[in-house]
Amino acid sequence: MQSALTVPLSRVTINPVPTSRPDAPASISEHAADNLTFIRQAMERSSTFTAVPGVGGCVMGGIALVAALVGSWQPSGDRWLLTWLAAAAVAAGVGIAAMARKAQAAGATLAGATARRFAAALAAPFVAGAAITYALWTAGNFTVMTPAWLLLYGAGLLTGGIFSVPAVRAIGACFMGLGLLAILTPPGWGHLWLALGFGSLQIGFGVYIARNHGG
Image 1 (cartoon, rainbow, N blue to C red):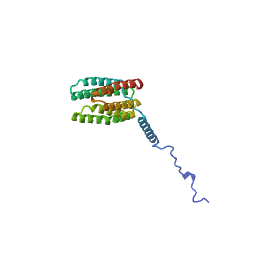
Image 2: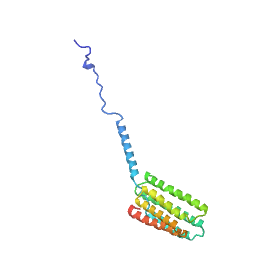
Image 3: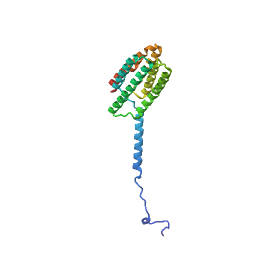
Image 4: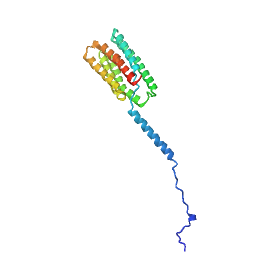
């Protein structure tokens, strides 16, 4: 006698188990994209800013030597300051153009994460230098500008050098050393310290960068 619990095999329906998930390709693509993003960010954090200009640095040093000579001829503090501000503007343009050219030749960009960190580290001391220069100008105190410029420029290179080659930090320390010497020597030596720092030291640094780090 057939049991009531017995079901004929012909009436049994077996649902096939899906062999793959429809969203599997999308999940794999998203996972791969996340991995690539992480790898790119890790490389940016560990990379250094190498677009520091070598030949451009030499040109900037030459501009500073001319400014030191012309500035020593000026009859007033205002005209001396105007000479150096004009030289700084020209040198800044040369430096930015040289960095952009070097980065392009290396297939890099100045808008990358490392370049932005380098620029941000430079910005604070440079902005402080501009503010202090204005304050000293309004007070009519021009002699303190020389050590202030050397110290703050050196501080900017030291902080920015964290994201660049060691030579940038070395020249930053040298600039700060010259700034300290400028404080300890008579004010009339200001032309000499500016010529040594922004002129000779900048040229020597540019030659080293050009030979060892390209461009």
